Length: 334
Image 1 (cartoon, one colour):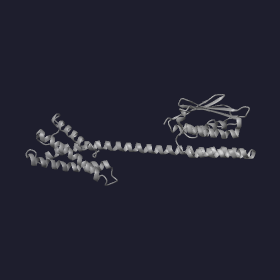
Image 2: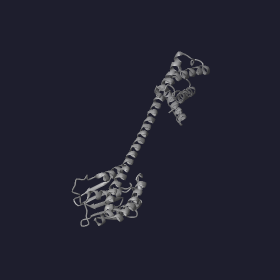
Image 3: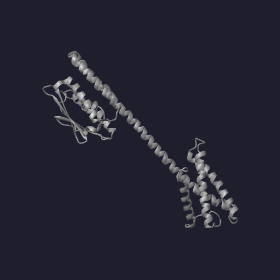
Image 4: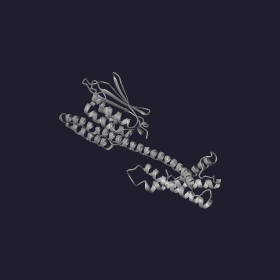
């Protein structure tokens, strides 16, 4: 506090207050006899300035020593000695300038010391408030940094879930195709490489444009067509304005993969998926044909998406009925 850029303004205001306190409220005197007002004001201003500047010097040069003692304690203890010296010099100065009854006497010294001590105590109290307020803000900033680091590491962990999960599922499909149709297996591998390249390049991004994500999704859908032919029907209808918005990367691919994972479908009974935008929301819905085996309804895909949106202070909406399953995800405007 003592190094504040407005310190001289604070000194002047405190001196004026102390002067008015003595004159108007008949507060404690500096000497046994009353000083003329002009001498009184300049004496108070000089004492206030001296106490402030002595504390400034202590804070700047002396509190760095004796590391085991708290800085505020060092500041206050050392300042008491400086106040004693200031009081002594003040009374000697008034004796030289004014003579009797403002000489260096025990009573005059104690009165001056009492005044400067109160000024010093007040300033050190305000300094303590400044000190703890600054420490509190530093702790808040440190806590925020730790929170961001923690969120970043969690987000990175969620992103890294995508790669092995995506690769594992499609390598199984590729293995099956290699036994049935080598030409399709080769085409599947080419598309898988292109899709995996996109995931590798964008999975660590917090957001990607919806236009970019839709382009990737169409490549992914063409890969699914190789695997499932006409048993999985996907319709994408997005406004041009909506494509300018952003979403976390690979979200739509995870939603489609979730449909594949939790539903059975054949050419005779296909699953229909529709992806449309409604204002600043993206709705992904599908006919609900759950597999007979017990499968976690959320799965890694929806959990991943839900947690990633939490980092953006957003939430997804899941609506489930007997014949349909719907996920609504918010679009992000940057």
